[in-house]
Length: 57
Image 1 (cartoon, rainbow, N blue to C red):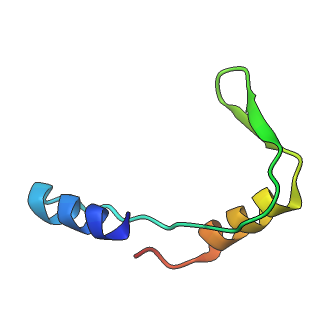
Image 2 (cartoon, rainbow, N blue to C red):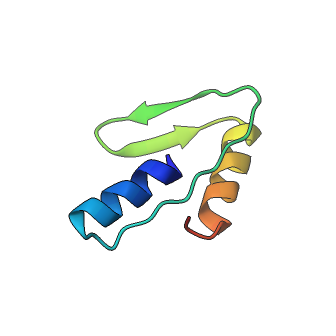
């Protein structure tokens, strides 16, 4: 995913980047309504912390 976003950034001359959080474990989560995301597993929260605190790229 990181390599693809690098190619898209270069080919389209966009100033975008991404962070990725990956953690394996059990997951129980879903989308409520149109836009509210809710999860009930610590593994989801761990992956979210990995993603939100990492440096882009």
